[in-house]
Length: 307
Picture 1 (tube, rainbow, N blue to C red):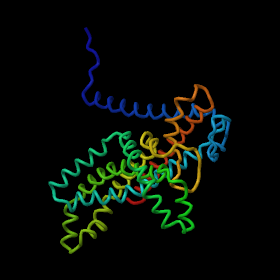
Picture 2 (picture 1 turned 180 degrees about the vertical axis):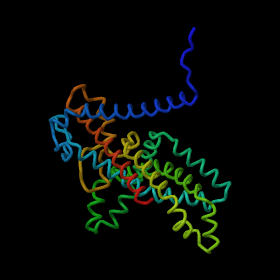
Picture 3 (picture 1 turned 135 degrees about the vertical axis):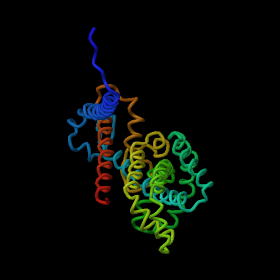
Picture 4 (picture 1 turned 135 degrees about the horizontal axis):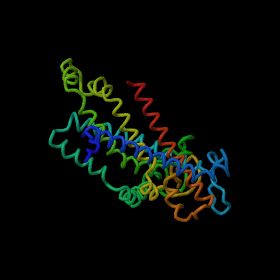
């Protein structure tokens, strides 16, 4: 009776790793093919005009991606602009200033906040942030800045409370814990000898952060921002609650708009199989994936430039 083939543990371990990597690649390739194939009918029907048209009318069967794409990009930019300084300050305070016991408890609270389901943030934004924006923030800004030419265009509109600014605020609260948690880990990984040497030369805390910690952990901070931006780009439920879901474009940040994810979530169940409407939604999903890939490529480019 002959002996069968014998495999060492290293060969089995290597095969498992190769299999895991191939599964990830196959899943990613399958997603791209599914979205591209599903949206092909819309790309062929509308051509390049699909990207620059703001019309989304199921009655006339005319669809364009410009309005939801602008809503997605602008709400994400607002969220990142609000969340990054907040996360940076929180991470610096937790790792360099706060007492050790207090920092431990607050770090756990930040991680718990990152684990809250997005629909909870959506309900919180709908019942708290939307009325606050409608009754306090927008009237206050209109009263004090209505005479400024550029700001007037950004602040105009009836005080509904829904819009890009409200969505950006809710998204900022959602992604800030992710960015904070990653930045805390990055700041704590800075060799203590570097910081102690700077303090020994008479540097202040701000100077240590500015000239030692920030340059050393720049790549990690970029990765944290990209992680938060990726979640903001694809966020669905929380955005659907607060953005108003109106397919239109304009300058105002305080009127209802829509995003790619919220539009897909709302209209996908009502789109029959094989219809041009469903194909347009699949095309939007394909473009959203492309946006996420572009943000990742940009982050890798910035990391190489700063290395």
